[in-house]
Image: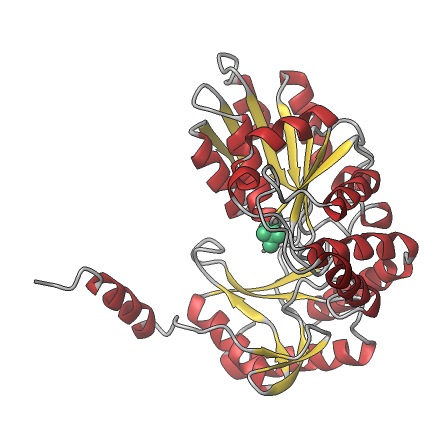
Length: 392
Ligand SMILES: *Cc1c(COP(=O)(O)O)cnc(C)c1O
């Protein structure tokens, strides 16, 4: 009889034969603008450490202090015995940061999205969702059992049309990423909010890549478009600009109170170690007190984008520090990334299923920590590597 896992071997063989098998490169030492991967010091354009906080002394000190005073683990799920003072302190800070009544911590941005959508919707309901929304939103929709209507990326007209078709549904959720993680474009949030209001839909935005990046003090897309009070549910992450781990929902007090009783990741998975919450809290405070971090991030982003554009690269519709270099062919995208590595630059090839087939790319993210010299060297490396592998 065939081994029950024989399909694993053949699927792997398939990846290998197509040249698509990769083990992630090994990071030694801290996440930083120049970091050591697979034994080489590289200009790092691959991390979400937008503000360079991953190794920041203030965040490290906060984590150590929390360990010294409250230990390394919460010991239980939030709703049983694992609700710690530092969790609530962080939530109060996040609510103030987002200008909402309340906020609720999740273990990750992924569980915040999936857990929230699944808690609020059921089979009688409909989700109207951008086609490029994050996998955690898609999984939340699946878990909820709600009917799903997917509109073409960023197309407010199509979203309105779908909302108009939902009149029989019990609840309707209109949901979008704020900043799209593989293209770096910003959702047309104002148009979507107006559509949601017209049809009485719940409006939810996943600001994982916008929090700490976009809007005043990095408050996200709701602030960027001045839509305070008009988006019912904002999701953010503590894992990107805030450089730690965790997600959160910001919204009304009642929304948070209900999610505490219904969101399955909170009911069935252990809460944050206090050190993780404490470093996130220090990060959120630091970003608000040091606006130059975000200005530096954006100066670097515009500089690098312009450099790529001038060199003739296809950077799609990016308007944030996430800049894809779109190659199309999957193998070629991976080869470009490999060649960049040889040139001393770390930027990862992104292929199906993370992006649609035929839209493979090398994704770059500059951070506040990069210097002009890093960026110039990276731009030169892109030109050389692209020539070597026959891109652009
Ligand atoms: C990264 C990301 C998430 C998941 O956040 P984690 O905190 O890493 O789980 C959710 N949504 C979007 C749009 C993301 O880019």
